[in-house]
Length: 396
Ligand SMILES: Cc1cc2nc3c(=O)[nH]c(=O)nc-3n(C[C@H](O)[C@H](O)[C@H](O)COP(=O)(O)OP(=O)(O)OC[C@H]3O[C@@H](n4cnc5c(N)ncnc54)[C@H](O)[C@@H]3O)c2cc1C
Image (cartoon, rainbow, N blue to C red; front, side, top):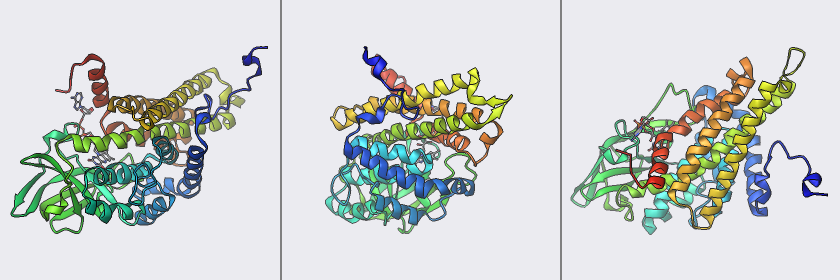
């Protein structure tokens, strides 16, 4: 008898057994984060999305700190030193609830903490990282500006020397957690190129304004940062930072989390559609029995599982030290696009119910508009892959 005859029917929730190859430690982390996400976050997220904010972001930060997900892929300074795959699984389980909640963790750990960990002085690391890992302090990462998004090299924020101090002037836009942050990692142009600065947000001249009326990532706080003659000591500059490559290397870490996160959003939408289709009856039968619905479910199944395999393979490459930034572009482009397709199909299967917050599908669909935009738009990652395979840059 062939092996095919002995095989049991695949699990609709993990069709290609992507999770089957996880180590015991990775499964532990997955389950711990999943339990927290479904127990503590899922019951609240629709209300937060509806309210357009996270009402008690400090308490949430503390919970994330206790869970150990802030900077969990970093070593030392109170961080867990977990594998890339473990970090990815945490992002997946958080984003299965909501992209905004995964963004909270990504910005704190992969952007603000990674910048300090990678480019900071020993003093900066000891001052900020342990409290950020514990969720006692919140960080943000200010790179984008009103007129400088995909092309951050065109930034207008300036840092000039004044005696032994630095003085920063400029505006940053679309900054996650900006108005609740204790510390902002701000990127500014200097005479010697782009440098990173660690800016305590109570420094005179620093202010932050919440961006209202968002239709996406509503369970997340997004802000404008205004730097008006912000005077900082020499010790505020990240000594290891130099050039645009510094912030881009942090973005690459956050994008890696997005690769996995998108698979969580996709899985949640697919699961919701599968459940809904099984119980919703029209024309005297469950809509899951119609061929057109099954086509949608089959396409979603393929997208969810292919995205899951992609994320796992990129994670394994990262843990083996062989992950190139174009691998991350591949994952960001393909997994987010897959999640967007799945969310759209899932929303259609839910009919009118699909446009409400009673079901997660439109919330995910709207969030994924941001996920496809930040940390490099789909077009920018396509250009990155185009350059990788042709050797020709088409960015400008
Ligand atoms: C909710 C939210 C949270 C965010 N959080 C942060 C944060 O914490 N920190 C931070 O620094 N930033 C953050 N961002 C900003 C985000 O990274 C930028 O929005 C993103 O880089 C795109 O920049 P942009 O919006 O200015 O679009 P633009 O760069 O103006 O792009 C507009 C369009 O033009 C296309 N385009 C641009 N250049 C090219 C080209 N060469 N070829 C073809 N097409 C091109 C783009 O793909 C896009 O479709 C956040 C954004 C959102 C929406």
